[in-house]
Amino acid sequence: MVETLTRTIMMTRKVRLFTEAEPYRFENGAELGPIDVAFETYGELNPEGTNCILVCHALTGSSHAAFYNSETDKIPGWWDGIIGPGKALDSTKYFVVCSNFLVGCYGTTGPSTINPRTMKEYGTSFPITTIRDMVRVQRKLLEWLGVERLQLVIGGSMGGMQAIEWAVMYPEFVERISPIATGASHTAWGIGLNEVARQAIFTDPAYRNGNYYPYGQPSRGLALARMIAMLSYRSPESFTMRFQRGRIREDGSVDFFDPKNIFQVESYLHYQGVKLVERFDANTYIYITRAMDLHDVARDRGKLRDVLGTIKARTLCVGISSDVLYPAVEQQGLAELIPGARYAEIQSVHGHDAFLIEFDKVNQTIGRFLEDRG
Ligand code: COA
Image (cartoon, rainbow, N blue to C red; front, side, top):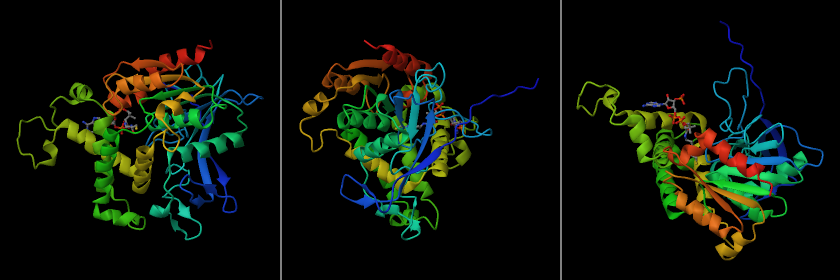
């Protein structure tokens, strides 16, 4: 039987939002242009410009959130389970936008982009970038797209940080936010994990103080950084469930110098490390983990309670029962500080990554929040 596959192809687009003549001014005062932004959109913007949903991606994500980029793509965008006809972020009702954030390495200007003045990658000369910078650039993109109001800003982890900043920075522009598995500021636990990951990159001799582009990535360091991070994205119970004490070679050998004799969990982590090296830039990893660490909605604004008290958007904070990176109790605490905010919990063994895996549960939770117009 010949199966005909009908798939929707949505291309990633790119727009130049800032130029050398009119550069972007970063939060730290640095100026840079040109700045290009890669983005995808799903659905149609209504004539009033008011049916837009902004999806903010997490650490190593991209603007490719849904559908396929080509006929030959093996997998669709990272939130295809949530975005599309009949799904929570219904593209027949809403104009859904996802952009690769400023400093990203999926088409938006960042450290791995060629600086037109030197014709070399920016590398570590790229300005320090914050979540607020990312949000300002997203705001400019929405202006360019003709969006007048956001029905929802949603994202998990670092995407959730952007959602909270959106509600604080543009209270009149945002109807609802749904921060998932995130926080009003990055925790000491999260910063600690990021620093260990960064050190893995810095101590790889191939890093060459960030000037590695002509020679190739610091592969070992970046892979190790990913392996460390992956431990915080899952949970002890999910690893037990998936790998137990399984070995690659089940012959009972105790020769631990034999690479074929490793545990399944080791093999999985190595695989995830290599996979990231193939698709991600090490300097970008350093910049975005720093942006995460610097995230604190109260920074230079006053007391946290007062700052969150300015949020006008209807808010649904979503926690994940087994999240060890952003424990559910922290999402509950966040909801208590935002006026009128509600809290929902996704029951899952998958840990922090559950927002990228438990599509049915996320659909139900977000679908209900969007339908509740009271
Ligand atoms: N040894 C080697 N490889 C293994 C393995 C083992 N024992 N067990 C599984 N794998 C491989 C699979 O073959 C598969 O390979 P493929 O991706 O090339 O098809 C891959 O691991 C599957 O990954 P897995 O984590 O099991 O998928 P999942 O469905 O549970 O989760 C994602 C999907 C997208 C969430 C996950 O892969 C991922 O990328 N997580 C990190 C996302 C992230 O950055 N989160 C942080 C947000 S701040």
